[in-house]
Length: 415
Image (cartoon, rainbow, N blue to C red; front, side, top):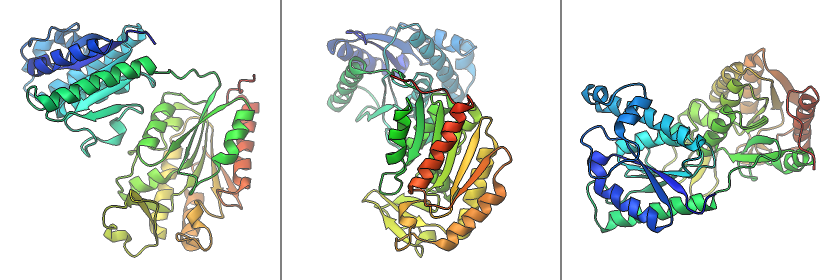
């Protein structure tokens, strides 16, 4: 990364010139350069842009006058978001920017989320927002490596709290650009999903096996944002293959839990044609916040408190059948090689005999439904084993090795 990184600063000069001028100064003081993109649609403002708002509108295929005259602030900002995303991607591809910093309230945040998605993984992207971490922000719109900070006291004009937030954001994005390490991809990358090793443990055996074959493994924590990041990279063909063995986010989404990666979970790799080996890890339970009351619909179900943040409840057989149908529909959309491993002996550690979520009847219902709704384009492999047994991991590697031999997966990089 360059010693003096260039930061794409995005904001609305018509309403936030004072804040933008201040943060421009703080970025320069931290050792960075600013390329300012004005995404406002009203008066020009006092902060002179490097990329004018009319250029942003033009990049979206329209004129600024048309955006101003549309009479709908939501439509206007959506158009500007499209143009800003196009320009940001072009600037990065041309080597003109090293990172992005956007600031705003709900309007600016809405736009900034689109721009962040348009920049590749590994490019520092920070959004300073009055709604940081809010439930207003759907997980499927959060870029995998987005940094977000609360813009305290930043709704209207400068003050000591606002200056503190702006200065920290300036230092953070410049520091991130200086320290950034873009993924080198020296070896083909395999994506895998899991929970912590207390619930799902197959990666302990699979990681060294894949590395011995010349692959790099990235394991994603399926607690909402992890699955979202996994799906985003898979959809962009960032993996040569995926081992998607923790589908709890699918179960959570079907059950209405807040711990979801969105409706597109289990679709990214399949739609992109990326070879995928799939297993229904942890779909027998639904997550909820451990710091809130247990949802009424699960109050009489067996439960497991993982920590003070997250807890799980075992789901009833009919819910498991619904989850199986959801998995089947998603796998049916796959355009690449797909194998579903179905462990008949259990699908997470607390599902074993003597553990709090052990439910043979519920597992049998899921297996029965999964057999019935497995689509024709999917190879179904049943295993008389628990998902955490070595038999499961070895079966996954057998499928992987066969696909490598058949040329469906790129060969690993040997030393």
